[in-house]
Image (cartoon, rainbow, N blue to C red; front, side, top):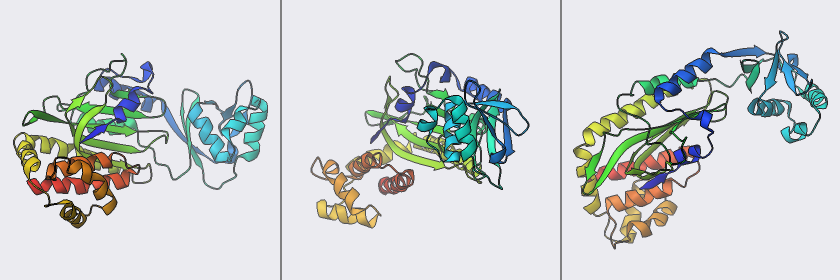
Length: 341
């Protein structure tokens, strides 16, 4: 089983004003931000950098706009200059540097503005998905899921929305399934960014415990899905809905069936010895490197069982950096657990 620290990392990087006490409060705030935001398209060479006290830009219609930290970095990237270098210059000099390095293009760039501040600068390949749209999908399951207990540091709620991104941590407090003397319950993380800070995604899991620092302990059946903000990003909302529907359906099935499968997997042998275990894992698509790495933990009691292998491989899965590779391995691990069904 794996320990998941996504919510733990979010907890310690969020300011109090990014934390929300309830899903409804978060949802309403995302609606408000969308209402008050404007998407503009214009050619990059028609931006007018100005340095009157601070670096800002004027849009094609003459409207002045401040830059926040994120959009400033994106503008520097568009110009191909170092933000560290621009930050060292006086505002007037910085504006002149941006003016001279702005690309001249036939395709427009898109800008996201709110209350006189530019929040994002993107090219035509970026497709924005609003946080409200993601939460509309999550709201369909509000009767099943709620945030975890508040974190020990006081303002950590598991529900966050800042200037750059959104993160949500939800669990089903009534979905516990007893497995011998242990219990598992379903939960998931979701995330998105309206300004290109991170992908759109979801991670579902079954867990045993959540500590006061929002580490999810002893999670199994961890499945992750993410999508970049490209043309078809909204299709990912249907996939996120399916992931939650599967979690809910499995919860209902597993109140009885899941316990029986895990109980059986804990006792069902997987191969007679180390050599046969490695051979069988290879037949199930597990690479030799991963299999050999997981084998010592899987055979710590002298013989590998289906459950001990699933547990050991899940630990390895959590250390894989690339989400695509991790998702592929998680699917293979789930197939191993199915052998005990």
